[in-house]
Length: 456
Image (cartoon, rainbow, N blue to C red; front, side, top):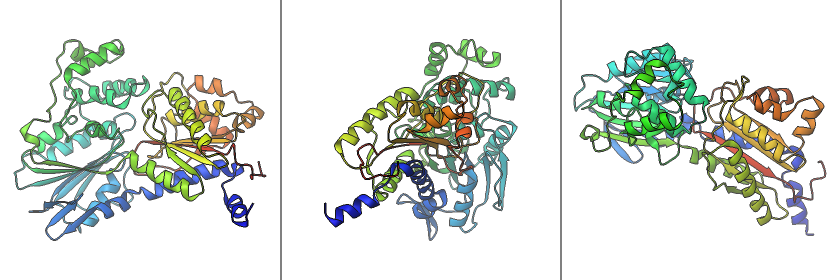
């Protein structure tokens, strides 16, 4: 063995540090996909125009700004910086108040994962802000994930806030993928499914969005208030019937679904979208690529998972383990890293605390028990389900340590209480709110063929 080879082996990542390395990859990713950094890099004011994605938007007069979602406050503050404060008026609806408010902006605290009174007040304020505009007016919409709950107003006033909360709780906990949830949300909403854009017509419109949905479904971000809706009201009716939701939704919603009284949303061919443009600032693919780069810099042979990203959490774990096996076999003697994105589905079956990411890690920990492997799954928004953490990390020794604490992983999964399990083992990822949301990130590390690691 040459001295260079020996040096490379010494510098290679060690399994004994595996969980720390997985955390480092995740935290480095969050730092790189920072909203302010992305906006300053991709949006510029050039003379009398705003340039986004190489397209110039003339600023004939100061624009109006509507910002909603988990990144709303940060996006509004950075846009104000880019435009040097030249904004006529604006409003934000986010899960929290900003630490510093922008002049001429109204602020509302919307609920998440379920709407609250602030969600409704913010939606009403937005509709008022973009009403009675002209073709010379310019509206900039800043949209990010979480907007489906944070920003909402029922189309039918008979749907009370309590009914709206119950309806959203059912959608969030029944295991539907995000695109199916949002088909139903759009057709019950006065702002979703392009209806906010209709109110702003005939003004020129630019939507800058951070995507927390599959790349081919941009109109699902926050349920698409500013984008034409490809889904149909018939799909909404069919989903409610096929998924057995009619017997569980509140009476006010059930009446609309059973009587087929919902109105259709505006479609891509609608001429009122002619002056609407869209620019994706960040997406899950950005996070995956940044994580791969971070892992490579740490010495891992890295690959993006190609299996389904939006499926049942146990199926996703098994598919990703198969991909990890193949990656390890292709790089004998090297530590490897598999990175996956998207949002898995995980029905809530018990009264505990946690979310899809922690449930994924708890299930995966049982599959890698005793192996020289590490798994991390976390939300880029800093929150996982109803817990105060973003996710969790586990390795091949997690169940051994849990057993010493008297913890039964299967029992915690059955109670939907993955947060309590990982809080007890000290393996939660506590980032706090990130003011961002580009879906989830899963990181798998394998050290099984790395013989130089003498510390594990």
